[in-house]
Amino acid sequence: MKIDILSAVPDLLSGPFDHSILQRARERGLLNVNVIDLRQYGLGKHKQIDDYQYGGGAGMVMMAEPLFNAIAELKGETAYDEIIYFTPDGEKLTQSVANRLSLCRNLLCICGHYKGIDQRIRDHMVTMEISIGDYVLSGGELAAAVLVDSVGRLIPGVLNDETSALFDSFQDNILAPPVYTRPADFNGWKVPEILLSGNDGAIEQWREEEAIRRTKSRRPDLLDKA
Ligand code: 6GU
Image (cartoon, rainbow, N blue to C red; front, side):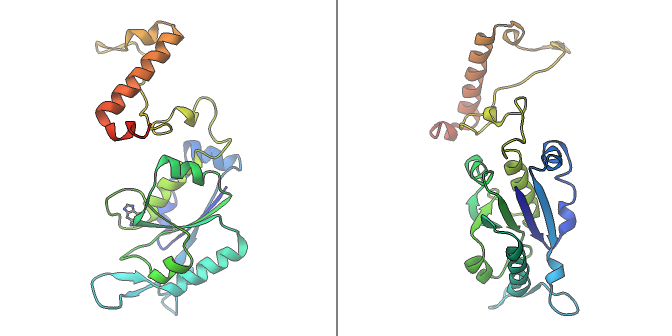
């Protein structure tokens, strides 16, 4: 999968994809992330990309023309499955949205700043609008990083048996059970006896019970969907 990210602050995206699972995905050629600097498409000698909003009000709006030119050029090179704009009024990013996007070939992500982007770009060029939660970020870059991480790890071939997504929290709307590693006694804090028993059936049953208990107490809203 290729994910292109159009941003006025590309530096914000220089670190997050260089580690762990996403790094492996990139090394294996399964994920290719490109950050494109919107400023290249800025207008005039100052490479202007934002302007005051019509009707008055505080805050700058990202102009249609630089965005249009950037998106048009990128679309000339790549057939995108979705052109995604990150905005607090978008569709909430859930595991099911991530699952769906992980099957795409090419995505273009547009990161807004200031008061957002000119509505005409949203109306005519964007195909999907995503929010990562009910709070306000100062720009779409961190949301794009969240999307690349949540989607990238689901690309077929990225995870192996050990890191399989099948047992993730949310994959079936049940939270994951608690996990432990050595030592079995740390500071007198003990690992549940059952996990040391070697009884695979009993362990599996314990994990299921704990997962459901955790979901009931922390996220009862999920159980209605499970
Ligand atoms: Cl996707 N963008 C911005 N700017 N703020 C957000 C968001 C996105 N999701 C939640 N808050």
